[in-house]
Image 1 (tube, rainbow over the protein chains, first blue to last red):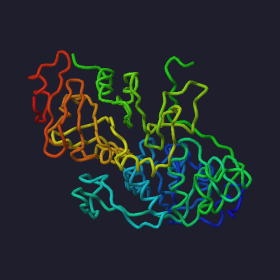
Image 2 (cartoon, one colour):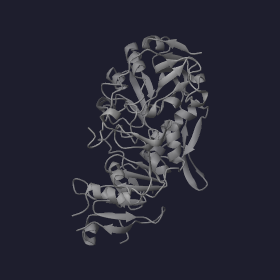
Image 3 (cartoon, one colour):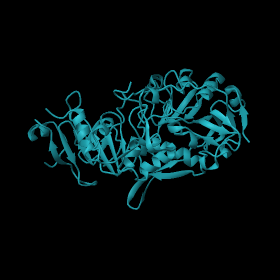
Image 4 (cartoon, each protein chain N blue to C red):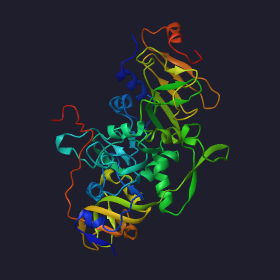
Amino acid sequence: MPQILTSAAGALDGLLFDGMTIVAGGFGLCGIPENLIEALRDSNVRDLTVISNNAGVDEFGLGLLLQTRQIRKMISSYVGENKEFARQYLAGELELEFNPQGTLAERIRAGGAGIPAFYTKTGVGTSVAEGKEERDFKGERYLMETGLFADLALVKAWKADRKGNLLFRKTARNFNPIAATAAKITVVEVEELVEVGAIDPDHVHTPGIYVDRILTGQSFEKPIEQRTIRAGAE
Amino acid sequence: MGWTREQMAERAARELSDGDYVNLGIGVPTLVPTFIDPAIEVTFQSENGMLGVGPFPNEQEVDADLINAGKQTVTALPGASFMNSAESFALIRGGHVDLSILGALEVAENGDLANWSIPGKMVKGMGGAMDLVAGVDRIIVLMDHLAKDGTAKFRRACELPLTGADVVDMLITDHAVFERKGRGAELFHLLELAPGVALEELRSKTEASFIA
């Protein structure tokens, strides 16, 4: 059974060390473990390698850890919304490994599933292929990509039961279920903790076996990057 | 002279067929749904993990947990589904999405596409673009025929870093529509000229070879 914690600092207590690798769920600012990221900042842990599709924005999400220079390397697919990121990268202060988004997702999935490497068409003939093994299958060219596995996964879910079974909400699911599988320790912050049995087994998105700690009782800011409203819909 | 962005989107919308699953890139492609024939049913996929993307929400419907790949708030149509990012790209990489309509910085005469990076200037990342062009059956590009400085964007070879090699099937610009009969060594054929654009003018504004 996962430990249930009610403070974000407590949820990370004893898990952090300098130079560690962290995989985080979220797409843009949607479905990010916002309370755990703030606790990570406050912990002052340094030299992090962070696997995350995006890097937050300057004032929110993983952008907070860039401001404090706690991140040494990002493995991401798109960081376009973060000016501090671009500045640090162009100044040579931050390492960056761009992965195509689907390749990043599959690397995380594979890492969590015990698959060390796989072949994909994505990136053949582009700079992504540089230095990678290539192989033909049925007359088509593929690249080898490796699985990713982290020391710690930070995940945001909608609901968890006390056994760690998780439900995600709408597109806040994104990278969270795969991130939960791809680390030695998985910490999940949830909007609601429910009793065992309250989630129908047929509806579970992520089984509790992956979950080590659950953070509950937090508030969520959930900022919106592009608030778009239908024309004529007042 | 030439087509507006809306007219380019309208032309692209005519390429959709009943039952298609379609992924739209950011920019002009997002205008395409407005112009779809109401007699056909098309399902839009968003690579952050959704099938059945609906229109933008009204004020009451805005939900921070419901966005598209451009991070815009959207709605979910009846019959929509959500999935994790690995499954979302399994749909794409596995060839289950019929069509993707994308923007571009450059397209080459052999179907190469560059739309993600300007070295030394743009540090954003490729997002899902490389996966889409590698996995989706048919790729339609919507782009201006000329760059802002007047240089041709439909080129002999791409100068910018590639998103994919030999991946573009149809190119719709504000000047013309081009299509290839297949991938491999095929050149593009000119299908249509925009009103007021003469073939000689098109050739003078195009670096790529094409079949007229």
